[in-house]
Image (cartoon, rainbow, N blue to C red; front, side, top):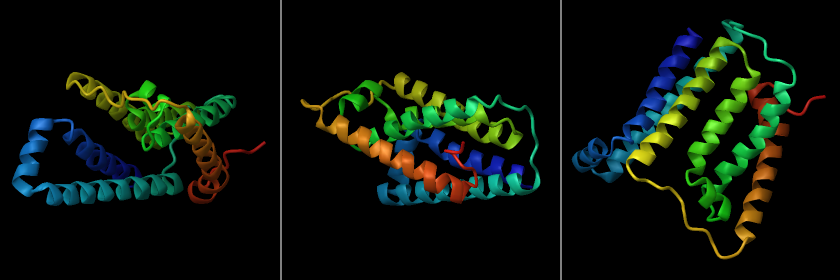
Length: 193
């Protein structure tokens, strides 16, 4: 039941995020519902989908674990390294920087990096479904943005202060996630020997 709940959650969450790439349909929905009602509905659907993903994945890990393949031990180190980039990328979403201008779509790039990193070190079916779905969505979202002419963030500030801030903040968040969030919330130690 956990794996099925995970799949339903992915359909709801990623489906709502795919919907926004259909700009004409989205614009009609905003016009019909009003901007605030649309945002509220989108948020509600996303939260429900996310909740189903978290609950389903947790139930799957506790009761239905299905091992598909065993990744080599060194993959864990690659995952840990890639996650530093994923966290720095997402941090750039909120601060103008040269890094953000270079990446153009930092949120999508972060999701793709996060999902690829986790696919490399998780060989169970639930993880393949979860991280594979997010990787596919990230690829789709980037292609959809390019097709509609969305060049993403392209302006960079004149100095490099924001880049330093973004990298330092990213490293701090990365360490907090690795030392506290991942072992205590997810149940998997990141920085183990």
